[in-house]
Length: 129
Image 1 (cartoon, rainbow, N blue to C red):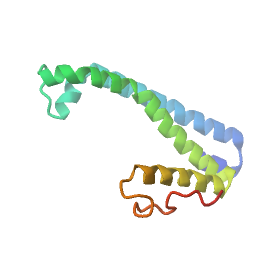
Image 2 (cartoon, rainbow, N blue to C red):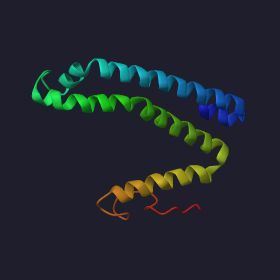
Image 3 (spheres, helix red, strand yellow):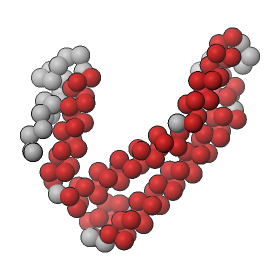
């Protein structure tokens, strides 16, 4: 939706599309947060932890904290996707390349093999700036 609106050049449509995407992401994040908070035993049983066991008692606070991160995690994911699509169509190719360079740098610095062997297409160097 965002890419289509951005390619048409209609900034009001872009704003509407981004707003809708973030609203839906917020609703889905809240739903996930409430479900995980309310059904911690079921969530733990999915990974093989017996409800009421010592492991379940230790894992319950972790599940509660993870449930709180649902909303910010999904909003940041949707926001990044919206920004990338908008930048690709409005900001020009250099913005898109810069975002890819940053992602490559992060991948290379977290890779134990080093920038030349990690498989990055840009080898960790921002070449379009």
